[in-house]
Amino acid sequence: MAKDFAAMEDSNRSSNPSIHDVSDPARRTVLRGGLGLAVTGLLAPLGAGTLAGCATAGGTAPPLLGFKGVPVSTADAVTVPEGYVTQVIAAWGEPVGVAGAMPAFRFDAGNTAAEQALQLGMHHDGLHYYPLDGSRRGLLVMNHEYTDDGLLHPDGMKTWGAEKVRKAQAAHGVSVIEIEWKDGRWQQVRPSRHARRITAATPCAFSGPAAGHALLRTAADPAGRIVLGTLNNCASGKTPWGTYLTCEENFAFYFKGPERPDAHQRRWGLRPGDPVGYRWHEFDERFDASKHPNEPNRFGWVVEIDPLDPTMTPVKRTALGRAAHEGATVATTKDGRAVVYMGEDARFEYIYKFVTRDRIRPGGFAANHELLDHGTLYVARFDADGSGRWLPLVHGQGPLTAAAGFADQGEVLVKTRQASDLLGATKMDRPEWIDVDRDGWVYCTLTNNSSRGGAGQPAVDAANPRANNTMGHIIRWKEDGDFDGTTFRWNHFVLAGDPANDRADAKGNVNGDAFACPDGLWVDARGVLWIQTDMSTSAMGKGDLARLGNNQMLAADPKSGEVRRFLVGPVGCEITGATATPDGRTMFINIQHPGETPSERSDPDQPRRISNWPDFRADGRPRSATVVIRKADGGVIGT
Image: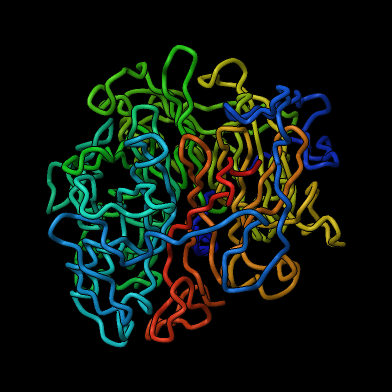
C-alpha cells in the first residue's frame, strides 16, 4: 500500500470489541530470536528446504541465506549484495506491445489518454511470472495501484478536465507483457499477442452470489452484471490453474460521498464532499456517490484475469467477499480444492480465507472458470491462548440474518465488514500480504497501526500486542489439519523495529537486520521468506524510522528466524511485488513511487524532483519500474 489512507478511516469504526475484551493479554509471552510465541511449545520446527539442483556435491543443502547483507542506504539507487546485478525493465509509460499500437513514453508526460491505455500503468505493485518457455520466456503480469497527477500530466492539476480523468483511469489497472532472455539480458517482446492493458474503464463481469444483486445495480447497469474497470489494485495472487488475481484496495477514496452518508457508506469510508486526492467525479459522474450510491459497492473485489487470453473479460469474484483487499494467496488442500487467503489493509480490519466447494480441474482457466464462485468465506478470530477459529460468513448462520440487516448471501458479501463485526472477528493492525511456507505455516504482514490503543480505539490484544504500533509485525498460523480447517494455532514470527530502541512501542525482536513496516511477502521455491517494507515517506526522515534508510527487501529463514537485508530501493520508493523464473536464477521486483514526497502525494500541480530514478534525466520524472535481479555467476538467487 503506497499511502496510509487507512489513517483516514478511524471515524468509521464500528463498536465491535477487539479480542482484548474477551481475553487476557498478560498470558502472552514474546520470546527472543524473532519467534514470538503466544503459548510455550506452540511452534514446531520448520524445515528450510532447497530448490532442486542446489545441493552441494556431497548432498548437503547450502545455507538458506547465502549472501552478504547490504547496509541501509538513502541513495537514489537500487542496492543489492556483492555478486548481484540489476536491470530496469517495464517502466511506467513504456508500451506493453500491442501490435500496431506502441506509443513511446514522453518524458514531459505529454502522452494522451489513448496512448496511456496502451502503455504500462503507474505505480506497479503485485507481480507474477507465467512461463511460456520455462525460464527463458514468459509473461509478466502486474497491477498498478494509483496515480500521482503531478507526475502524470505536464502541468499536473493546474487545469483539470475530462481528458486528464481518462488518462488517470488509463494509468490504473493491470498490464500483461511478454519478456524473454536474449543476448545475455531480459527484454520485452514487442509486439506480443499476449500484450494487454486492463484499465479503470475496461468492462469487467461480476460472478458469484452477489452478481446481479440489487446493491450492485446502477442506472448504467440495471442488471448489476457488468462494471467499468478495476482500480487501486494492490498486491495479487497466482492460481494453480494459471490465472492472475488482482485486488481492489482503497476504492472509497475515488468517490465523492453524499452529504449524509448512511451507516453502510460510513463503514466503507465514504464521506461528505470531495474524495481524497481524486477529482474523477467532476467529469465521470459514476464516481459521485450522491448520484450513484451503488457504484462504490461495485469495487473492493478480487478480480480474476487469464493472462494467456487477451480477449478474456476480467471477472470480479464476489464469493471472496468485498474488502480493501491486499493480496489473494492460493493454497491447495490434499483433496485438490483451492483456499484463498486475503488481508484487508485498513486499520482494525480483518483476515479472510475462502475455501472452494469443488476441486481444481486440469485444463487451465477454461476448466475452472467457475471454481471461485462456489465455496465458503471465513474471517479469522485470534484467541489469547494461541488458538484461532475461522468464522463462516454465511447467511442464516449465527447473527447473519435478515433481522440483522442481511437479506441474503449477496448482502453478506457486499457488507463483509459489517458481517465480520457481528461475528466478533479480531480487528488487526492493517493485514497486507500473505504467503505459505513449505511446512504449511501461513504468514501475514501487519504493517503498522499507530491508532492501536488510542482514545476511543481498540486496545492491544494477543495478536496485536503493541499500542501506537508504528513498526508493525508478522503473524503466522498453522491450520489444524488441512488448509480448509476451521481452527488453527498462531504465533508472532517477528515484531518489527530496532532491538536497540529503548521505546517499548518501537523496540522489535528482529534476529538480524532491523526493519519496520513489513508489507510485501513472498516464499520462494527454496523456502526463503522475502519481506518488503513500506515505511511512509513522512516518517522515514525522522525519529525511530530514520536510521532504517530507504525502503528495503529482506530475506528470512523461517527455521532460525534470521533476517538479512538483501536490497535497498531508491529514495522515496516502496519495494513491492516479487516473483522468479522456475529455475530461481532470475528474480523480478517492483519499485513503486520513487521520489514520493513527505506529504505522501506529489504536488498536484507539478512533478516531484527528489528522485530521478530510473532514467536520471534532467527533463524527466521518477517512474515506477520492474527490476530484474540476477547473480553475476548465473546462480540461484539467495544462495
